[in-house]
Length: 334
Image 1 (cartoon, helix red, strand yellow):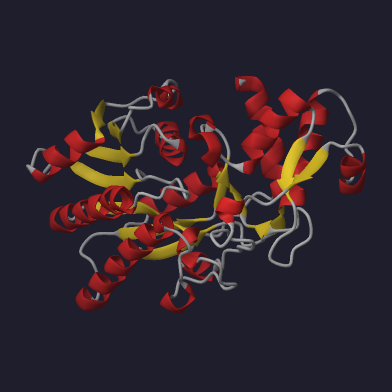
Image 2 (cartoon, one colour; image 1 turned 180 degrees about the vertical axis):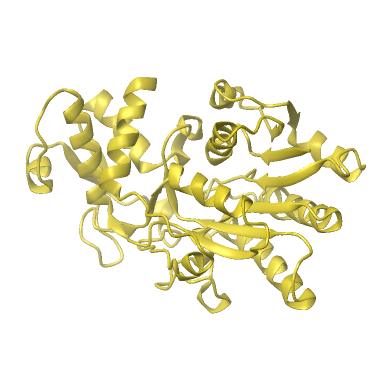
């Protein structure tokens, strides 16, 4: 039996493949689109049974090639560019493709664990897995939101699924294997690159009533995201939609301070306070981009009540812990 990971050469997907390998799973079919070939590097240290292009995979899946041969699909493949303006592409790639996988998994009674997003919540201040708190600000968020609604509707009609269906609303994920993401890579990644090349990091000036760098997000390390996925893979009786964050919003200033101090530590330099970093020009505030106005979440914080109730009780790394670990990894893989 195979485990299928879509988006396997991407950020979270490749970390899941590595996590499966670390528990001895090798019969993995990696599905992705390698038109951006540099993503292959994320799989170099992973063991897989086969690689299939995302469109060929869907065609073969629907033709019955994998009937009876699959234990689970970990569906991470999507266009995650929140600035993408081609709505037709976004809906076909994120919504319609996911719907085909859902139909197949329910028919075959195969576990389906899929990537949703905190972008489904939009600019509201409550981040709880309930319809009343969801109002996405861009078509990426809408594509994830709409698929979540289908899952909910089917669950409400059926009462329960014959096989597991779990959606993960990822908050701001950062960590190893994201360098291919370009502008959509995490702020932690960009800060490491900026500090190496310019000797300083950049943050947005204040907006939406927040002071410079004080917009707050729930930053979650990809290792924690992987552990949540594997927990549910081990508990096929649990279905639903769950937030995956730390449950604690931290300002971008915390992230910048952690990034710079971790970089300084590599050179044997002492940690500095935020005020000292700003005063010395190691943190710089830049104007808020016009193209993000009205499409930007200035605050996110995962409500973990549902995740904890489902039995996941492991702690999540803070920005200070997770970023220090990530900077050390980046320095070794630069």
